[in-house]
Image (cartoon, rainbow, N blue to C red; front, side, top):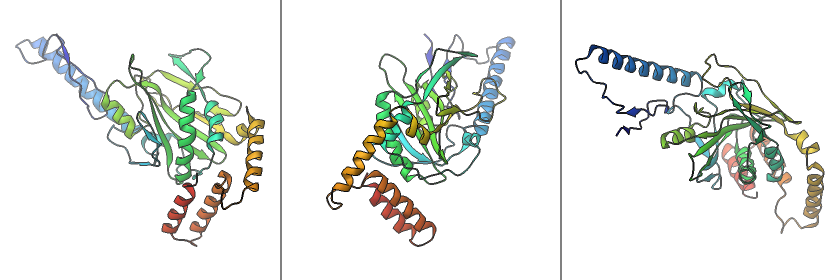
Length: 323
């Protein structure tokens, strides 16, 4: 009975069957040798093309830059949120610096995350009316961890994430991507949405490089909403390579000010502000807005060389510990 041998071949794409009726060795048959040599040439060509595409796009599986762990709750079994310098396919974004650090409370992250919808693409057909990109449980996780990561991000780092949906009855599926802020616009790049990841080596690749595209995944698109729009990026000339990294731009300030639940959030914030004013500063926690203001002021002092880098990092950590 044929067996399978799993091995990584540079780009982490090849899972090759072994023993399909012959061993592909010389046995005196000229035709048999020709077929095997042709198979070898084809496989080598596909490997070279895959790595070339990887170099042009996300890079081969091993070519990734280190990521920074930002908090304990950001690293959980089957999911992570980290900081990483853009590389590889991030050249599709078109700029090098972002409006980071960026401050948004967990309560404000939730409506932003809940507003993102996707729709599968089958060939050139669009399937159904779409669905929310993130489940309520994932929204809770991301609303806490994204705020912490963005507060620590530099202007040359974006926030990457990975989420594994492990169902014992099916193949594990993984959603990965990167977030960044430019001015008043929040951007999400998501090359993989519930992409099948049956092998450990593929999951390791996505753990190191969340912008790596799983070619076997179902294609999808972001649905344009009232406060968001799907962004057209650079295209690829190869039909089997995703034309562009699915990319959505969200006007988060407009969404929070006028979108669903805006009045309720405004009333809640006013109540929180009144409560904070009534409590003595000595015995109360620091409001989120005050922490953000202090972090901005701290950054200004560092940029004007009024405090050292070491002082800046120490004071920033002390403020973030008050989250």
